[in-house]
Image (cartoon, rainbow, N blue to C red):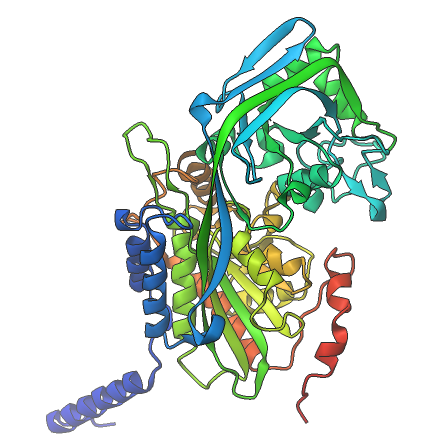
Length: 566
């Protein structure tokens, strides 16, 4: 075959370039861009936003910026009265830690407790002064009342007027081989009974004056420094009956302090822990032990806001898929070693908010979704999932026909990964959809490496899960990813370094040297999953054995009545 003439070769080259240009023109734009993600994080984590505390000096700027970004991403208002926001009425409580006086008395010995070193306390009742004088203490084990598991730590013992002392986590968290409790609550995988929120709620339901949890890093899933970062600074949703819903004092005791208290009462902490793993455990009142507290409390009403955008459904507008991330961080706090007071929340969770915005932008490419899409930037996640909880109690779209919720909270910044970490393995059908989407990226799904930390109960999706909505959480703290560069060891190192140094601290700041390709992978996963659900008639279900399945099953009729494809 003769080679083409120079003129023919030039013509062929021109035609090839023309075809390439046409192909580029027809190719859809990249829906999620790492540079845009980085810019959004840099803005939200800048000092101008003052740490994004709910009701703080940075809230108005944060809300305005999010509305601007939602508009730019092509969303419509999804809030109240045709606007972009949903008001979340909060109360902000602040303990005067510097003047707080707390003590433990056993016999004729009184130990003054150092706030922040020995104990942290908070109050979520609108009172000016907390005064507790010589209240008796009762050790209640893990403080679990779970009839469906045949477990009751309280045995009818009254807590009225007393301080309940709890162990963290579940009764089977430290169970040994051969102990009957082993596996009864999921083994090392935490249930909701493991969470500090449950324990404080249970103490209030039983009329306790106060509740103290013995801190142990392994069972809590975080060190003492995390508790110090927000001590005495509490938010709650405004309640009609706070004296019924909240104990007067809630807090944490350092393990060594608790062990010393028990020893002075003639008791041994390790022995009590073993006894608390038995179904016949009965609360133990600490002989001769008394707890006293006196501190001033300020409480301020705060109007905070969820920011909500939407894309209407082209065929099924009453069915929704909701993406969520929390915009709040920890605001201004005690100075670190360098004098920095701004707790910027770059990874926790400006990166999730950036993902929310980019996923919304991604839905502008291709055909419009058949189901509606909601994008919610929640307020007040850090003080207890309050923005999402308020939405769960006051939804702007019916929860019965909310198809699924995808939540982004702390994505890793160490580069692309061969896998995606699943928090809450074995809960619902969204896990199967995740595996399908990950396979398209050439990735696998890895269950949470440390389910004992209860991450599944510690992010905003839980506010919807407890109301039956199938949920999926992507969180970089679920365990070290199998990174393309460095493998699982490098992934574990990223998690360990972030949690030890920067989690809820001023150093959780934007960095120019981040490798956001892994975070972008995860954002694309959720975009792909949302597209699949938005263009189908699939209704994800909870798996058998999930504690949320009965709640969802109760509203099955609403989904059976939904239109079906012919």
